[in-house]
Structure formats: C-alpha cells, structure tokens
Image (cartoon, rainbow, N blue to C red; front, side, top):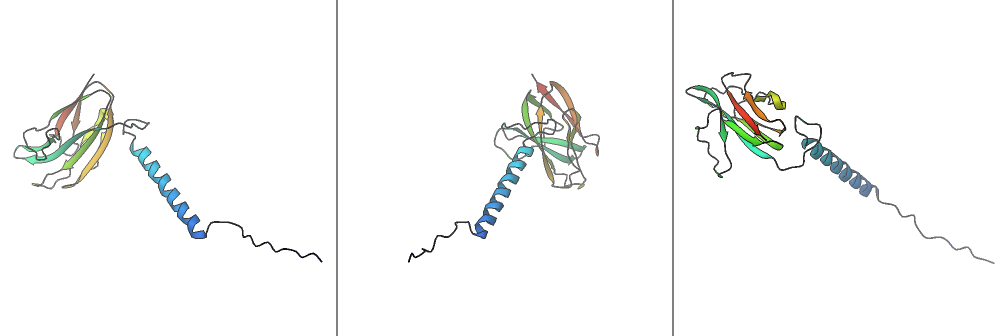
Amino acid sequence: MVKKQKNNTKSKSFPKGTIIGIAIISAAAIGGGAYLWTSAIPVNSNTPVFAAPSNIYIKAIHTDQGYAYDEQSTRTGKRALSGENIDPSIHVPQGTLVSLHVINEDKDTGSDQDLNIDAFNVHTKHLKYFEAQTINFLADKVGTFPYYSTIHPEMKGSITVDP
C-alpha cells in the first residue's frame, strides 16, 4: 500500500490589515504628490515651476492719511515694519517666481482688504483683520504694472519687472 502524503504548505498571502495599510499609505502618497504638483503651478501659468520663489510681504494698513500698503522686507532679517514704505514700488527680474504674501493689519478700522495685479492674474480674496493669503505668480512680462485694492481705491503701488 502506498500512503499519500498530506501537503502541509499554506498559501502565502498578506493579512487583511497589511493590505489596508498599504492602500492607505499609497493613497496618501498619491494625494500628497498631486497637491505638490498643483501647488507648484503659478496663477498665471499652466505648468509647474520648481524654483525657489522670491518672497515679497505686503501689509495692508490704515494710517492717518488713509488706507495704504506697506512692504515688509526680509532682506535685512528684520521682522518689524517701519511704515516708511507706503504703497511701495517692487522690482523683480524677469522670469522670477514671486511668492506674494498679503497680510491685512488694518487694526484701526478692521476693514476688509484685497490686492490685485491684473497683468499677472493675481487677485486675493477679501482679507479680514489679521488674515493673510499667499499667491505665487511668474514675473514673465517686462514693464511696470500697477497693483491696487478694489475695496479701497487709494491703496496702490507698482511692480516693475526688469529684463
């Protein structure tokens, strides 16, 4: 008589928890990659720009002369604004990726503020007191372009893109 041997090998498969964990990690990685890809697209371009941006900080304020913009410079490492650079003229080289940080610090009236640069499709939302918004755009046109507020027409300045 011939004895049949029993096959004691089990099929190797991943436990259900491991498969779910891998699926969650994969979905998070894909979602994070999609977010990074779309956030690298400036508002005036269709393709991502993977370059270090030039940071410009603009503060909306209320002075005794009325509403105005003030520029905060980070070039010297100082964080305090002097209030001396009212409605500043900003200069950037052509081809620069600009990260424009707009902050509403109108503590006197608490009024909504906004900032617009039509030439580069830059339009912030209406910012309430101490709200901020960052918009990335590519300075791809040479010339001097105005920026302004639709809420307070006296708030204005210019951005010059140098060749």
